[in-house]
Length: 470
Image (tube, rainbow, N blue to C red; front, side):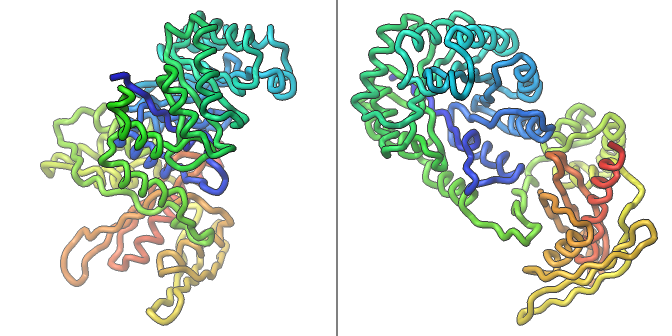
């Protein structure tokens, strides 16, 4: 059977109505990876450090799928993207270029000859860094046939291993698109040496049918989306191929038995409307208690686990975290990933407190909305904030945000008992994300609300300190 690759473009073309947080994008990539998606495509990397951290974090989280990131047609951006992507198990660089005269002249502002030269140079530069290079011809169905053939041949000769043609307008019927693919293969011998992919716009709600028509004419890779992005539906295409697998003599790596469950999770993640007034905009991280480290693990393994948690430790903090881990590991047989999180919070980036908790008053009950009246001290000055929240912790964090005037993505909130009995001590870990980087704080108290507030302020102080240092 011919293997058909399904390349998910959900994150690459994420719409405003389905904005995901930094951590949710990592979780989405993990879901797609476990589903058996062949390729997971991400947004490009601009000048933002956040973009590079996003790509690096997702690349580290994906175990089986190819991770593909588009590059601009210049060597500087190619190197920037590669530095973020190179640790992926299966990296892919995508060179996207306009194929129609409309896009070349009005969007790219270059003549066909200059575009061909840029394609050649960019694909060659990508190939020197990465074995898997994809050339994407935008608006291919409205291009001049001879130019499209020349562009594809140029890209293949420069080292492209996959060529994707896009029906950007989305106005072709399935029969027309199938004929377009057939004619393209006949006029471009270079396509025999590479995988041919398609990307179909869903303007006429025929993207799924057009993608299948392309497969019937020899295409082997389809760009689709787990959550609707105006292109073919990953779920629909996977179901069609699974149902007609024997008749069409094709198959995919998509796990159809898990399709419904994982699509449900992805839909919930992309469509659930979160309250803009709540700091809890990312949910709570999945439990990793089944993962452990021991005293026999090398420093490299410990730091790798820390990276898996999402931290980007400085050279100064790395030995501190390893040393703190050793002290704990010497006393117990196993150290869980959650405990490693607490170690990072207590050992990494200890800074002078910019904000200090002065007093707090929480009102909460089953018949009233939770309110928090918070007083923090900064540079000897008392700052106050009063907020209403969905619960006491929610209200307390919102009160801190109102005082600081800043909102940070709350990546995780953990709570566990560290002693037993009526006067048990509670430990909280708060993970805030700023500019893509994680900062964790730790708080311990017999009052879990107080522990949570202290943990939040501890993480907040690390962010403020680093911002002041820059």
